[in-house]
Length: 156
Image 1: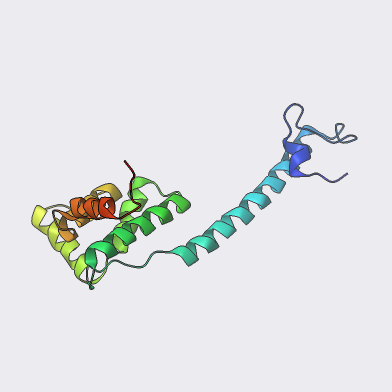
Image 2 (image 1 turned 90 degrees about the vertical axis):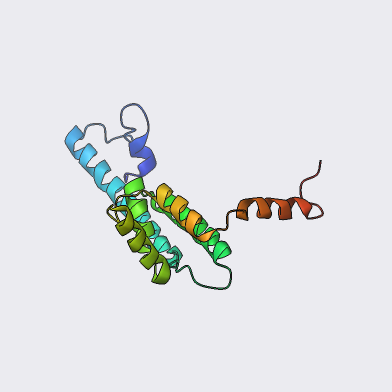
């Protein structure tokens, strides 16, 4: 009887199929480990391929609607980070790597003027600083007022 993930990983006595219980435990465990590694490798490979296709574009800080572009870029980066399971340090590094053109120049000059390393900030701080730089002061208020004024928006 061949081993399957279901038969090996059951709770209790390792879920050994009938007739296999007389095998030495080391053989059974190593065979279970190999089976599990193959399955995890396949899943990791699928996720890596998905991440390659979903990788967000760079944010430049240029265009006809920079505030909208920034919001969309931040959302796509957050989605990407969730899929990739990046920690906060990796998110900050990747976020900075996805800045390009004037936005990258602004970041470098901003860090230089503050006397801090470009890599000293987390993704959350990078987002806040980008929003301060590229979103008008009343942007959130204007957006909320526009949403509330749309017929069929929020019913009271």
